[in-house]
Length: 141
Image (cartoon, rainbow, N blue to C red; front, side, top):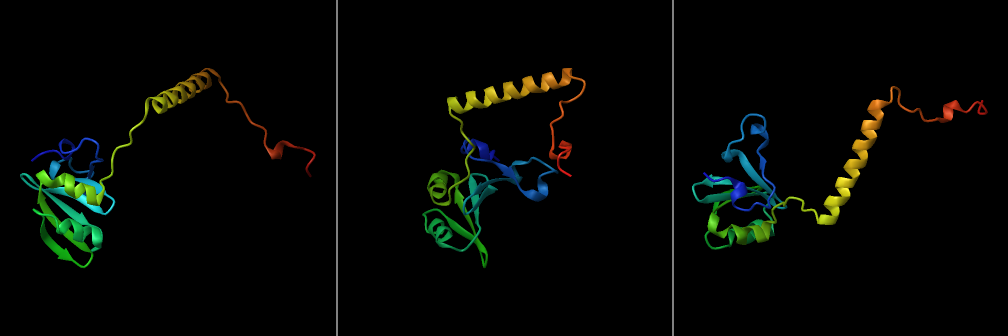
């Protein structure tokens, strides 16, 4: 069984909720999508569970090589070979990992350096600096 990350490294890979704390087996991996999720179905096969029985699920079911495995009132479970995953993913839009530009990475690194400096300064001071509140104002009675 192959890891879902090996199919496309940009996709977000999660684990099914009941097994999240129990195991990190590839059989429990899912790829969340806008219209459902991908899952392992067998050697060389993937499945797609749609959230609804809408036009997106029907469009995937109409692709060559896709088999309707279950047809329920709340959505479809479809099975297809890994070779057509790009066609299916173009329809169901898998969630992708966030990608940062070099500018964004540098900005976040500078922010963390500044935060770490503040934390180090706070560790050397024995008492934190107190800010003035509106309760400190004696003129208000």
